Length: 394
Image 1 (tube, rainbow, N blue to C red):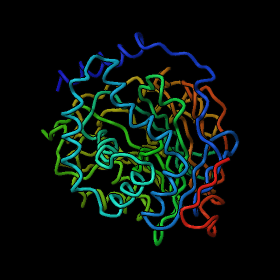
Image 2: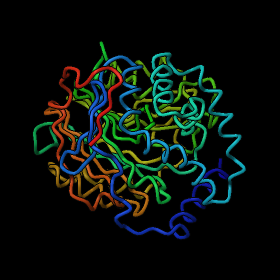
Image 3: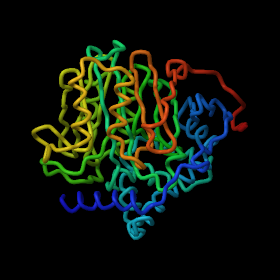
């Protein structure tokens, strides 16, 4: 375990100080507004928002019809990252590890992935590998979250702030995408992610349930870092958003779902919040303290914690010293724990009014203005915008 921790730290330092980075016109989002069947891509407050609805196959075709070119850049990203650290030799092994996870992906998600691949002209096995590689490749997704429950919030409703920190490698900072899903017979939800990644890292549904994942690298319970018999975690998070309405329901679902790796899942509904600390062997709920839940990249519960020292956690949990917190206070805390070039998404969910405040683009995104997205409006279904198979891009 110590070796993996050392490797992760070395990777962070290598990419922070070796990989060149500068904000430029190249960071502009590559997406074009348009429609594809019942799907639409538009800019809201300068941010790209993709709306898809219908069956899994329909949503896969809509996503590919509107984001295929950008998805190709996402598929090329892992090999670019490995090349940057001189580890291209790891690629075949990572693909093989990802291939072993395919049987654990729900059939409906495989159908959506296959429809995406067929529409975009991509290798479906490669697309599945990219969607599951985050389970097998564990050298650097960081992230921080701060949740304020209603009694501690100046708005009277919960606030859920979150930074996603990862290596942009000159690619990811311009590829972030807001995706609004309206699946048939399930909860509508928003996912802040990337084209071609059909699972979820951060999101909220129409019931006001919000989730965000954080990688963890050590545990006391002896669980393996990777269990190929588990369900790829981004699809588990997506299932939570499609099927659950409360923290308790999310916990129950995760306890019944085999898990691939170590992670902390920050969860907030309209009443309460907490952090689900997950390993292939255990699920432990860490409740909020005095109406505040903070989360970084380590376990803190007695059955799982190996160490408790974390600068980011200390700063975030310092919010408990404040009487009440508003949007500006949460945004300030997120900026205090930003990781510079690695902070490529910053967001605050408001579950009560179904609002997302989001900054994506040139890192650190915690320094960018937050754009308000009215999700209640975006979650409402619309009629068909074109004949089957028709794509219109502006």
